[in-house]
Image (cartoon, rainbow, N blue to C red):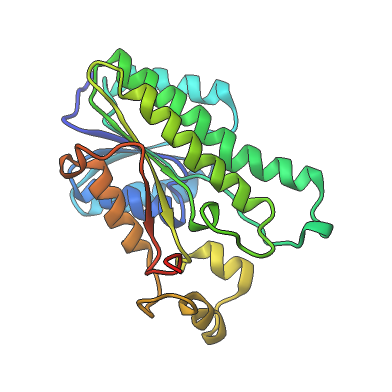
Length: 253
């Protein structure tokens, strides 16, 4: 068994915020376990981290399957021997008016965006408890979980659940010895595949991304990765149970 100084697990690491977070944590000196379903893209992320001198491996699994989480947890304990940071980034999104949204669609997004975070936090805490790691769990929520977003009748409630769940988990995790910190990180509108796949890639869409943003700049994946690095590290040692927002001021009004 090889024991690394710091170990981080990032779900949804093959694209978007998860990919950016994994690469940033690699730069911060973490041994990064990149979780996802696409092995080809997973290999690309591992290669990107290793290309900058970092250490990483890809683990293929489905965040919605508890058996997969149990297998991954055993793999981490036997191979890395500890877990210091968990970023629950895997999730889905769709935009559709309520009258046109089926219950099946609502339940599907809830499973992806909420139940996966519950499972991840559960098994992350188990690993940290059993290996006595003073860890940090970062659950990716959304500004949409704090304010109403038109046509996000499934996404907004799911992210609201992630935020509230993270607060409850933080209270429980603080009782562990050593304590584990749990926070939600809530991006505003960030330029990513989630935006371009849903709305397209055009000047009009970029203008939409900045619309209502007090700083009048496009939110980038790097902005969220920077926040992940802060919540993961010792600088945030007194921060737990919070819903951190990185939105350029979009939600300030």
